[in-house]
Amino acid sequence: MGIQKLRALNGEAEFQFIKPDSSVINDWAGIKFRYRKITAGANPVLEEYVDAGVGLNASTGFAHRMIALDYEDEYELVITALYWNGVTRTESEFSWFGSGYLSDRIEGSDVPFTLDWKDRWNFTLLPTAEAVADASLPFPAPANPKVIVEEWSYRNAGPYTANRGANGEIKLKFRHDHITNYVKLWVYRREFDTNFMKRSTWDINKYGAGRWEKVEVTATDAAGVTIHIRQPLQAGEYDPYYLNGSSNVFRNTSKNKVVQQAGKSTFEFILVAETSAGLSSIGVKMPFPTSATGTGEYKLLTLGERPEDITLSTLSGYATVLEKNFDQAITALDGDTAKYSYLTYNNARTVTTPTITGN
Image 1 (cartoon, rainbow, N blue to C red):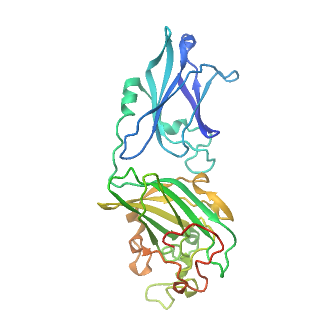
Image 2: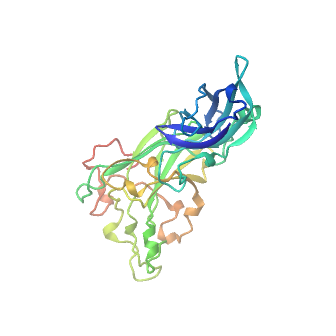
Image 3: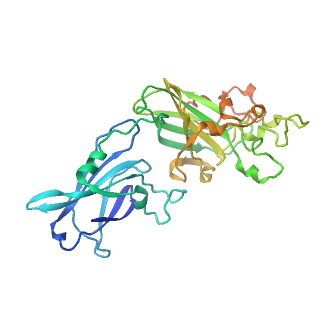
């Protein structure tokens, strides 16, 4: 029995199997799936599901089987053909072993052109006992642990005005129970507008990148922590023509510490876990797709790119005077309008939201 295709269908994983050889097809007794989520530092128990069906699709001659996998989560999976040994349903001596994730997104650099995810799982045929043993080992705890993001969404309730301030918020739900000696999460944010790289007279290091802010999240809950945070400060507070020692101003005072209005694909958010050993050197960069910039509510993890790991040291290296290094991140500004220019972010937004963490 071979694996022909794997695709997302109706909230589940649909496998299309190549039928067994005609010489043994009468002994075919179904398929056993064993699977578990990949969680660093944990050893989850394999779940099992037996599909006793042996029917073949009349038009393709293939067997189609469905199992419930959560999209975007990574799994280990063992697929074993079953056969009749007399009246006993028995496992084949060999099984397919693979690991990967599945998505119902149709956009993103990781999405296969054919929407067939089979090759992304690197299935290998192994002796069944070996495959099950491999899928029962603990996952190693990484030196730089990361939180698990369960929800990442954005809500914009309407147009931005000077009176109302930024009119939306980002919702984050994450889990940390797999991280040994977890202390807190830091959420870093900035605006980084790569469009300015196209303007030869402007230096992306000086203008396209805004300052980093950081939000401290000390809440802990094994079932998951949910917070709501605002958009980043505008990158436009820095004058595009500023050169060290020149007569050009460093900061555009009309845009000093102004929070961006609605959602923009230029937003960058990075999640960094802290343990008793200190801050991780690897962060999780969260996507903010272009298609999420209008009015409404958006589930950002369903619209395009997946979260990606990023080495934090690569986010510094600018001249210190420019205030743009990751390690120069400022504590998030609160809702005190005296700290902002005339286009203020304020607590008088018309949007009714939960408490904004760190403002």
